[in-house]
Length: 225
Image 1 (cartoon, rainbow, N blue to C red):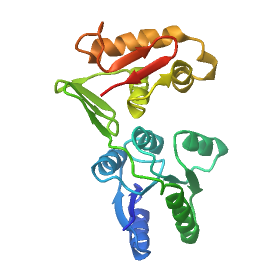
Image 2 (cartoon, one colour; image 1 turned 180 degrees about the horizontal axis):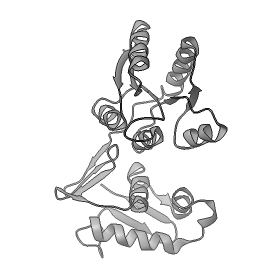
Image 3 (cartoon, one colour; image 1 turned 180 degrees about the vertical axis):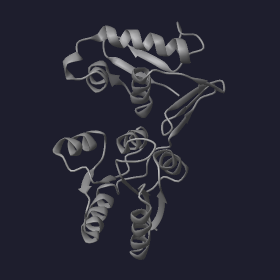
């Protein structure tokens, strides 16, 4: 059966969604906060996620970003925030659709069906990437080296995440600069050298002879397992 993850902190609505969606033949896991959502998505990847933005422990966009770090699962935002900028920010964060409250259940069901059709191309990737020395949890946004957690800055994590999501493949330097720093920074290749050096110091056994964080001179970088 198709499995849905519902992330909604309002108990009455969360319960109503779970009951209604189950009545329409879906398997539903309903959680009240962002941390529970990220754990649930990693433990049993859903076929579609419905997420509110105003959660008690984090913004729903952070949940979307956490899931998008490793999964292409369809995500529908269900929120009372109805400004144009909120919708743009939510979609830019990685959501596929945005439905404002109050809403009609028939419309939500139609959007779920549409999202499932778009997401039917294949399963999500595993959120855990492991090497003999490293354990990278894309869902939890954590990395450990030899069993010890490594603290990365937000920019270091974003850099690493992009490479790990495309592991084994070359990611061009201009793409990294555009995604991490913005379109006006595509010529700032010194940024990449500085942050790659920092990542290697934290994650490689021998930073001068990297095993995982590989440079393709003049082109870009790749992550090798």
